[in-house]
Amino acid sequence: MSVDTATVRRVARLARIAVSEEDVATMQGELNAILGFVEQLGEVDVSGVEPMTSVTPMEMKKREDAVTDGHKAEDIVANAPATQEHFFLVPKVVE
Image (cartoon, rainbow, N blue to C red; front, side):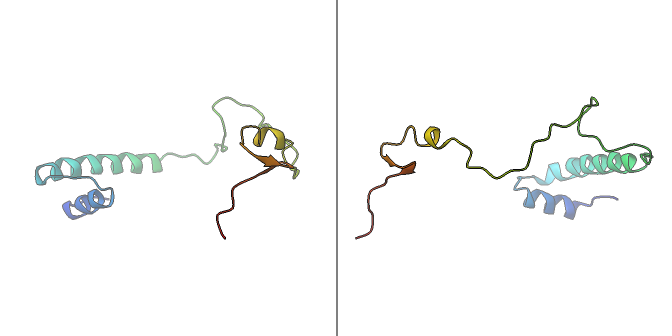
């Protein structure tokens, strides 16, 4: 895939990057080089490679999926100026 000058201007506008007319040709070459590298990556045979979550082989930590209140109600309202039964008290704003 080759990027033309109109595409460079459109990408610059979408990215909100000010590109002068002198820099359009330079940016066009850079974008074409990036796309060429991505095309090279697409040619690599990865059919025997398993997806991984880390560079080093390790088992992911798992926890039981349970719904709780977090047991942190006291910690959450600890710095509030006014509380009542683990709720924040705020001044009335509607009469």
